[in-house]
Image 1 (cartoon, rainbow, N blue to C red):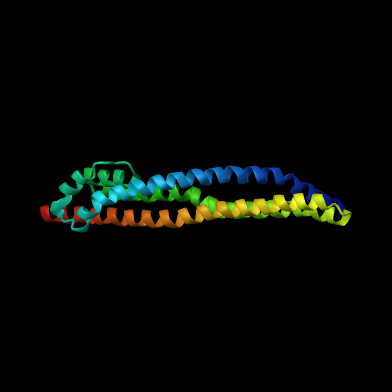
Image 2 (cartoon, one colour):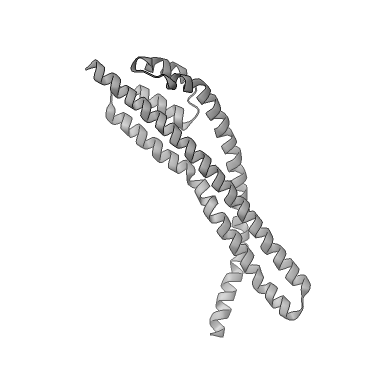
Length: 200
């Protein structure tokens, strides 16, 4: 049993460096995600300013006006809207565009999901691993070893929680935005269907 305990101790101790390196990498990715999130927010404000007034009172006869308002295809939403209006005559293509938008939205949220779940897990690992040598130092009366290991542990917890917080907040907000955009695209698709029925 002592041998098994030593093996487990060596494995867990060996995981400290990969855990810390992964935390640093995910923290950098989280900061970059925040930058991208801000850019996404600014684009969304500009697009909504142009498109929302047209969408609010959209009728089958107003599709041309919507197409003219959608001048900047700088996001997944506006590009999908442009494709919907381009394939106005084909219901199959329009349904494929909506499905592609849903898949791309889910893919866009993958990083946020990963950060929100993996960040706290790695933070906890980075906290628990240094506690082992800290306890050994406690039995030996080595206060400097205890202080250093506990400092590493608490730093890992804080970074892990920050990573998780970034992931959670961006996930919640972007998920709501993507759902709103999907609802708008489905509304435009229904308006196109209504127009097709009137022309038959």
